[in-house]
Length: 271
Image 1: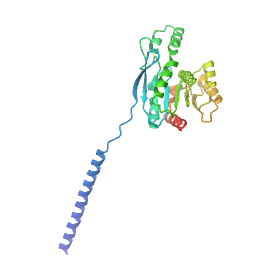
Image 2: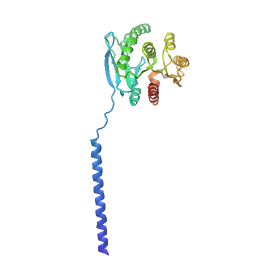
Image 3: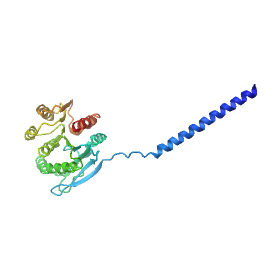
Image 4: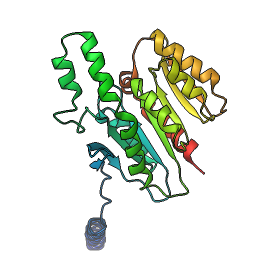
């Protein structure tokens, strides 16, 4: 009986050993197979340069989307540059949308000795001087934004559209562009507009607009409310937040807003 028990134990031991060896071999093979499958390279947002009609070099950050996707042009406010849209651009890239975040002339990578918002602030001795110099600088923006639109439009399929995201003072540039070119939709974050700029908006054909406002920032809240009530597209939306945060401070202060805006844009741009 003892001999039979010993034989059974040896048989069981051999079976266990075989199972362990086979398991290790299979695991090693699986690891080799996994290692042989190339990983998808992470998508990158590249800095791009292009020349305007007056031979000025503009800069921006561009994500090349999928061939069958539309495009979004992003215009920052007067206190930031294109990098302030990094979160939103990354969310747009998740949908394969082409995205160009422009540095307006005088900001970010679109600076020269002649055109620099930082120099204007540094050298202005009073508010009137600053305002005069800023008006001179921003007078170039309509043509600069048109050049950026054309750069993006050339990279988007002919049967696809372009939307515009603006914040603060750049909302006027989005309106001026839409008066010249066919724009699918707007995102307007706490828009800063004067009377005539609001009238220009009202003269545009109705397109879907995603409005974002702060209830206690009186001027931009009243503008946003007025434009939303005027707009007749049923896809338009108006999100209001308590507080006084404006433009990029509001956008980047809420972690889910970039994702929400990207989803809305993807839906309105879809065909």
